[in-house]
Length: 327
Image (cartoon, rainbow, N blue to C red; front, top):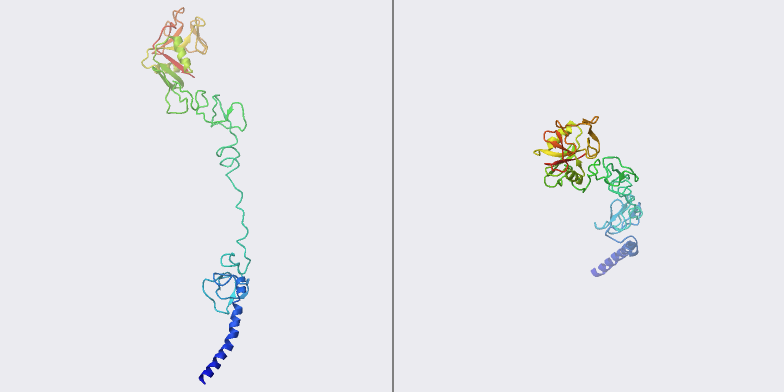
């Protein structure tokens, strides 16, 4: 009797459970789950902004599905906020929006290089330079002056560099020959003057070379010319005093005056006459010692004494030294 009632009871439960299981089977339809991303791991729901039925294994967070948080209660509803869903591939297709991957890829802009042709933006080759690259070469030594305005096209008197350190002296430029003149000829201050033994270069208003070497007047002048100089020309009392101060312990030196071309007419190396007919030429400075010049037939060159006065002497005889000058 008990077994008969138990059998009846089991059959009754079976009658109730079979329809319920069929309903669950419909909810768990594999094709439907496949279409909508599968259970768990954040698969997307088939709804796009409305209230949809949530399959097993998903919860919602403002429009994207995430299944790692466990199972929701069967029969629960999903209120989607309607915001754009996550990108496909991160938990399924988007909820409440199309599965666009972040929009179209934007261009990064045109590539810039700081300018057209050169660092700094101007259209000139070179670092940040100007298109005007020809520089004034006032002394004609082939090196331009960066301190003067440049021009933009090849022009006479201009060169395509600006490395001169003295554009007023053609003997001064980078890597120039050094002379015995007291000047930095090669634009490298550490390089000393190149002087022969017994000579020294002095820069004092003009460039001078003072030599304590016994040579004749013609030999002394040739030594000056080799240094791009000439025997000193004394045009005023100021320079007379300067030359006397440069002599140091040298008692007598050759200077540039001579009347070899025309007896009685004394001229400097530039041919300017400073003394004729026993008198100074108009506007010219002289400082002959009393009675000088004398022996005009034999003494045709000018010597300079330590006190600043002048005398005449035989040109081929050696003196104690000589002084050269470059204006």
